Length: 64
Picture 1 (tube, rainbow, N blue to C red):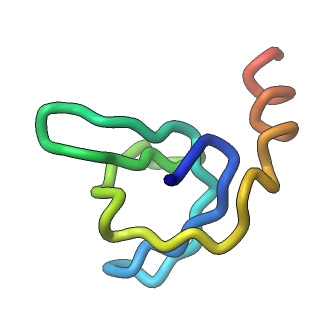
Picture 2: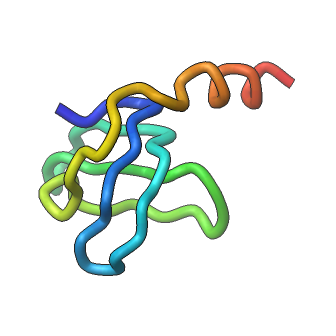
């Protein structure tokens, strides 16, 4: 299960992302990466590379 703070590899773009949000909506499971531009991808297109390695960074950034 992909969670906030995980690093995932987005297979269609070949990019590694830090996950800002992950969840489920009407279209299925999704991942939203931290960064710009904002986007949303299917969780099935992502592979977990590191679990929770950036959770502290995200928490600090959002508290400012």
